[in-house]
Length: 317
Image (cartoon, rainbow, N blue to C red):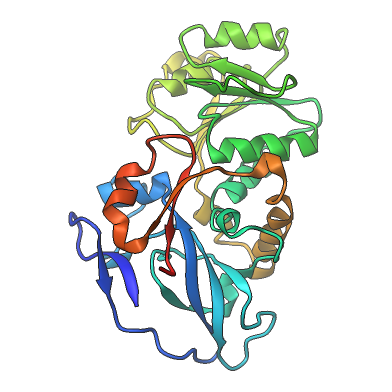
């Protein structure tokens, strides 16, 4: 099989031919991978800026979608030909041999490209909102509002009656009239107060870090909370201590995999089934900028993050 692998810390990824995984054993499933996106977290693993330590050698790829080729004894709830979402890393490869309880069956009406991007961003948005326990009429502010996570935050927040203030370096020219979009900058707190007519903002989601953290936190009401779940800027968070001591803000971090690690497999599967039903809605659609075969990994990596839309790897080519 082919796989994108980093052989040792500090080395660049390369596509290698590895031994085929072999037939599935008890409780195992053989999966032929179809598509996988290149996410910011994947690039952070490559540059060794990822938040968690990694063991080498490793096969890259935080998420993807594949098709079941064979089932081992004792596997239930999965059939040959089903498309599945692996819950574990290591998806930039042509084939995977996995435990059945680490796979989620994807409904047939979810397009392959959207199914490939279902593992990380939708669940992150759902858990960010679920942990916040906001009620109808409350407001949340988020930066990086052009991102896929932000798109899912808007969708899921609307179902809860929660308003969203979207902050981006370049707000889109065409957007629904009902949505509030603001350009990130030094006047952001004033612009937020004007847009919301001084209504409180108890919660902020920060995926940018760097100086953007301070600007976002300055918009949050006293005793509110700032949740940091990314660092797209590549910089450490900048946060004046006065926002903590004078306004009582709480700052905490969030990462998806530790958040779901203590949950039962059935609970995790139920969440992804719910998210899959929403993935076909137009407002959940994540645009695709380009698709490359795995052998063109270097080109794909140089393209990823350079424009609007996600770059995908076609793993069956």
